[in-house]
Length: 59
Image 1 (cartoon, rainbow, N blue to C red):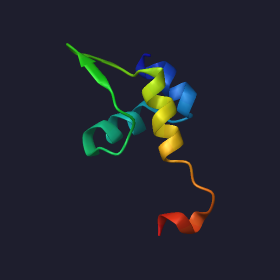
Image 2: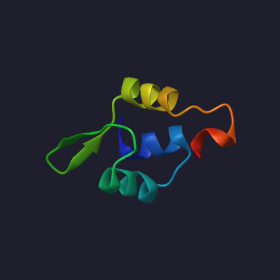
Image 3: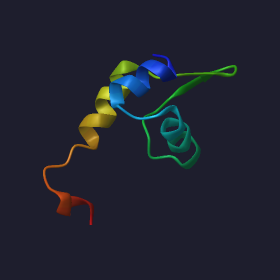
Image 4: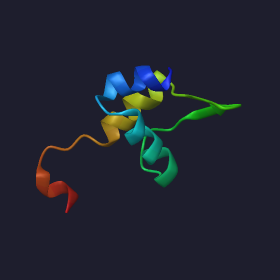
């Protein structure tokens, strides 16, 4: 998936995705030359791994 499609799916800005790539902690990505792509299954797995049931879980 392109960065644009991934942004739409996650409801975040391109700048946020870029920051996650720089700092880590975001979904896994693939870099092909200068292009960045995301696998839909990696996005789904990342969302599942980061799903919380309470705000106290990140404390």
